[in-house]
Image (cartoon, rainbow, N blue to C red; front, side, top):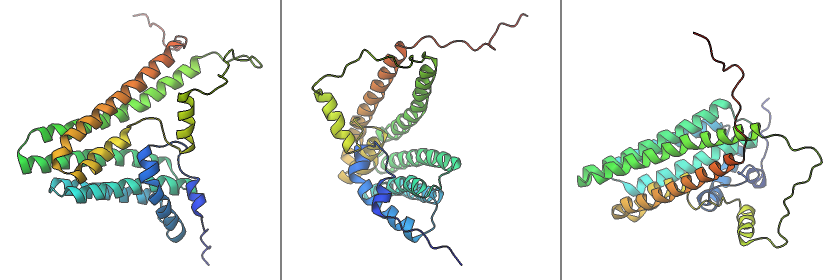
Length: 267
């Protein structure tokens, strides 16, 4: 006799959301994604990896629409693909069915979707107009996205190395830092955003994708290049700011010691 499937509530699903996320996800994706996740969790046996594969298939469908000049259909499919991509993590955390392979599949699937959609968008508009700027548009989108995803884990690795190299604070020792009696405007804004799970970045990779593959195609071909330039510039500024913060973080750290095994070998 089959075991009865557990009934999850909407609050259970909401508890699986990330503590902080992009404003695009929080306000324009999660309200729908949470309710669809509830239906999937309670009425199907779909796995997180199955949802990841579905997200990739929808993303490839979006790329095909862009390649054939169907911008509205491509934008709609990209939005649905991203929403399904948000659902796989919620299902994994809700049911405890996430796997290490699933993390890899989700990561690689995202990159394939972006590269294919950028290629499809560039190809479709170049065929329709003969304008080489659309080829540059596709290449620029792909390069920015790949740089962001290569840079992020490296910055995380640097921070981990710095933390490991710092001497531990003696137990019982108090910090000299005293918080201000009245929270600054920056702190109040940070708390306001945190209560709504919103990251402080104006534009991260998610907003960049949304601007290029959803908003601009829905508005029309005449804004594809300008929107991509503005969104790409803001994304680069955000990355530069994160790199600057990382640099400031490393300045207060002691030099990373050389491993003992790394010795000169006489020749």
